[in-house]
Image (cartoon, rainbow, N blue to C red; front, side, top):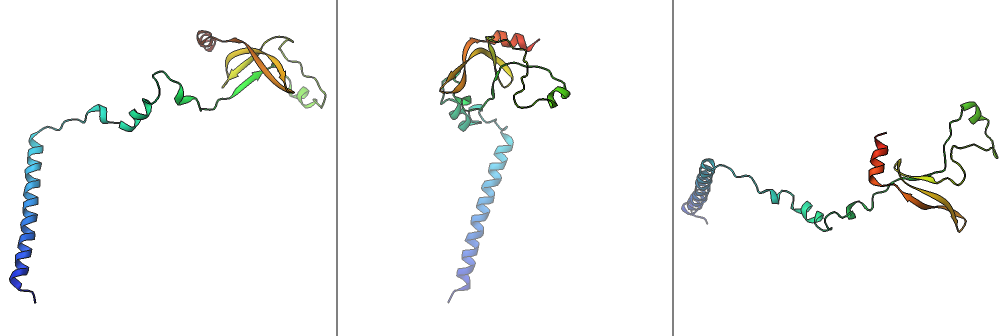
Length: 144
């Protein structure tokens, strides 16, 4: 059988623990209110991000090597009326503005990066790069 005095003693000690915890919290809150909050150091803002960036060497292209781009080799272009387009059939010849033996343009995402000539390797067409456009020339062409 449980004595009623024992139960009261347990409840009083539980209340004393809560009262002590509340008093401790009030003291902490009062100390925090007196002391201005310090901003967190900037070095700890993105620790995981900083770690992943430092895995490559500075100036390294490792982060972008797997990004796909569209590579186009342009043989030539022409403008044609819809009437002429509808008359095209198998075996029709379309005249392009490019001349035979003239270097073809190599474009990456629509931007000219090189010129080259057609080669055939194992029954497949390819292009041998003959001239790489310099970054300064690419910028100059963008402003035209």
